[in-house]
Length: 102
Image: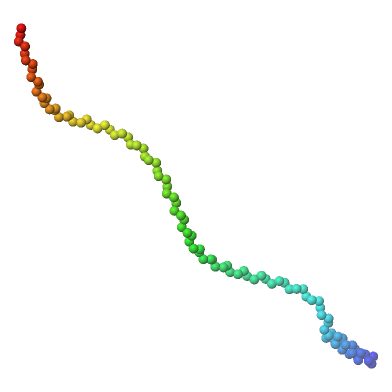
């Protein structure tokens, strides 16, 4: 037992020195999680209004309408005024000479 304290002390020193030594490297860790997707960008501005379109062509002239119906015959006019009296006739020819009685 004379050397037992020395042996215990030696063993303790050996044990402590072994505990302070780093062990072998451990296995590689699993890959980390994928990061979150970034925010969506802002909507773009509305485009400019287009130029006005060309004016359309003028339509064709319409067809001429049908001729109207002939009007009704008018009423008969009033009877005219009586004419002026005729001129006096010429005097008659002279009579034949008379024959004496027989």
